[in-house]
Length: 510
Image (cartoon, rainbow, N blue to C red; front, side, top):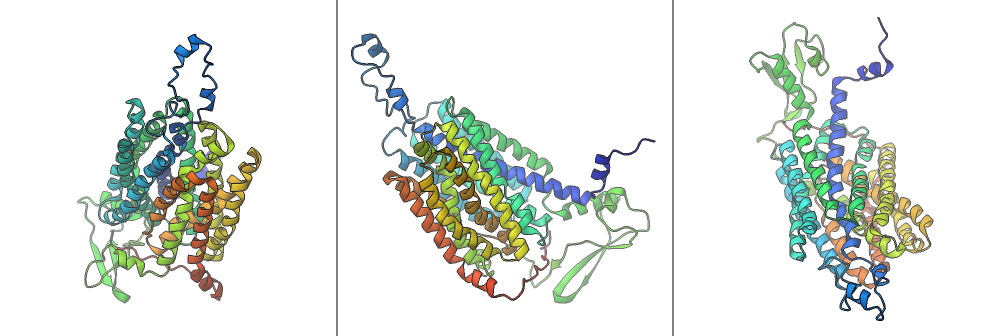
């Protein structure tokens, strides 16, 4: 008999439960990657909507050539006609900022509503509908190029609705990943998992940049089709909670689909649910998820908390009463302001500062997200090691402010320094943002403050008209405010004599 290949032995060393964890981790990672992949094209296409037409103006012939005058009419305004109307005017930055603002305002309002709705409907269905709708409206923006639409109201409407439907993503995927992974190494796991944001931005930049100069409509249509396809995959494969699998295996084992059970009420009103089995050997699928050779098997970790009424979804006011939620949420407001300003405006800034075309600027901007991946993982790893989430965020915010100023100065001195500063800025800006939106959010239960994401890109559009330095001053001010808001939690962590162990989560009835 031939020996079993080492690769197969390695695969067989993992339990079925571990394989399902890996599936959930990978699937939710790819699902939210597709969300950011579909958000990124607008930042790449901005420099194409309003182009630097100096190269075109050089082709305009002198008045002495009547033949060329016929090919290039005298009425041609090369500074505008090569841009996409209505972004060919001098107020193009305000129009681009208005599109960002409409998307992110709808996203901020929708995120609050999405958290409420998502707790009351099946996550898999809710996420699928959101992804299909997002794919539709992302494609609609690209169709504006195909059908030669020049009405600003059309683009604002598409961005507005797309902002609403995109809010289905975050509450859904973070709930799934929290259901499957405990708190012990949550910072590291969430740091790795949250790199989907940067991976999505990178892929979105590369895909949009491929078509931006030839047919920018495809820069939206292709990502729209990708997120719609991922929505179908989500419907087919996403498992919301480990208990869904356990219930499936139990029902498959019982002929009539029911299993006799006993209940007993323990301390603090907790009701433990026991399933009774006969002495027959359990099936191969079931024994990987439930203990062997037991007549009474406790379903773990299902702990149903019973009170005078059934446990309901947490309210907004209830979330605010959780210790640390207010400080972290306000800090997140300013952290998102900085992060989303880079998300929506960095390629255009590189185009203007480094005098690159849209494709090259988009490719170069991906280095910011590469740094963001490293920063998010390091933030999670350090916070797990020290047990101090706020202190980890505060240190990175403290370093980010002077780095932002350095980036605004060094980016004018060539490609090499710009690459280095993009990597460093990405790590320091996205590190705290990633930690708060994943590990801290899962620890505290929820976060509601997202309006900073809408404010940053709008201010960038308004301030950049007076020079890009004003935008960077705004970003540094936001960074310092985020740091200030964490000061109380940092003092509390630094004065603590020991690291507090993270308690086991009590799961509501699923």
